[in-house]
Length: 208
Image (tube, rainbow, N blue to C red; front, side, top):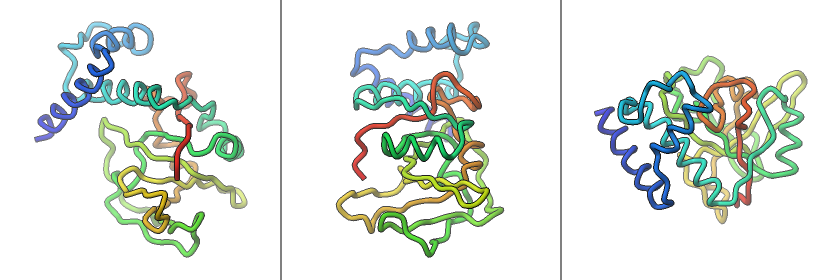
């Protein structure tokens, strides 16, 4: 069942890339030469279906970002909350990917008393049980950050939820610690590098 799911997803992503005249095999060969040389002996044909899925998701995300006019943010997790707050103020929401959001929790979040721009805010209790991460990262949209004494937090919208900018009551905002984000974010190539040269986020005209 798992391989069927990944296989179908890979077909969809390959068809998407073909619409842009892009051959994923060529992208893969370029990738392993410059970024993942440890895979130099693994051809695209021999690449496992799960690893193919990881590469294809990254390729599709990068192509989609370019097509939508998104730009790469200069923010990185090791730059701290003040830099993140400044980046959000200057460029607006940031699209990031990682093991983030409700997909990676067994426990449901609770609704907080506070609101964020008129929207309900949800959070997970300390020690909430998480679901082990998969090869696939998940995309969320960072919309805010704050510092409370010696702790830092981020607010995000989960792409798993409905999001209607006309009806703010339908939007859910999630709150996690900055350390949670830092531990679970992945760079734009899908790798858990602490200071990646490829960046971690895109920004653009996100209509919230």
